[in-house]
Image (cartoon, rainbow, N blue to C red; front, side):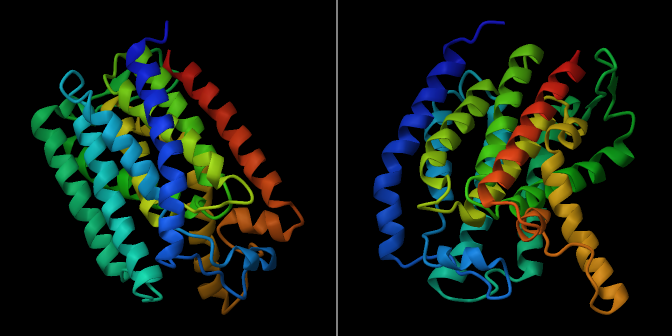
Length: 324
């Protein structure tokens, strides 16, 4: 397998756009006073992050969208994935805007956010069902290429798509809590998808390469100590990317491998909330999502980010082995 221009060019272009935009977007966000707020009851070391501009996911969105548009003609399978990226990015933007610009503490209400996610997912599922229903097939890891037909299990395939897409989107959202965490982890996943698309002829490698480049450029400003946060604008968009790319290559099962960090993050929140309610205020973790638990156990922020990113890199290698 040789990396071709349909990978290298979008990778470098998206990286260049991301790096070039950041020095302009970050000061603009600062002037709008769209700063991050930190909870008093949270990790105390995070209080110094208050005021750091958020909504930096706009940098990622613009970089990926601008780069990918040049490839839609030759790579039509990019369209549904890009739709999820932009669709969920818009939901995240509205949530961020209400919170940090209009100062509505909760942003979008939970029902509004969920409704938006259901609408975006529905459009994606309907598009896939009528344009290429084979995308609902499930490639089984470590099976030598065996696939479970989505058409044969259509009663399950559609609900599973909703669960996988919305679950992944919120998993990535929960992962975005430390400087460079969601960026670093998703960069590894984007690299995995790029290689997988080349191996499986998935036809989305320009988009996955563009996401990789955009994230690497953003990481220069998002690494500890972060000069900008991606906010829900970025994390929800990246969740759409992870889920959409998986479906275009019949790989939603692989999300549980390469996206294990996302799964653990969202499960830690579910477990914490459920246990808290059932026991009248007791907690399993010192704080959820679980990356904060490790911080309160004495890990530095950079250590948590490094460990989670390295784990994801190894999981992506395992995922590549599982394709064969």
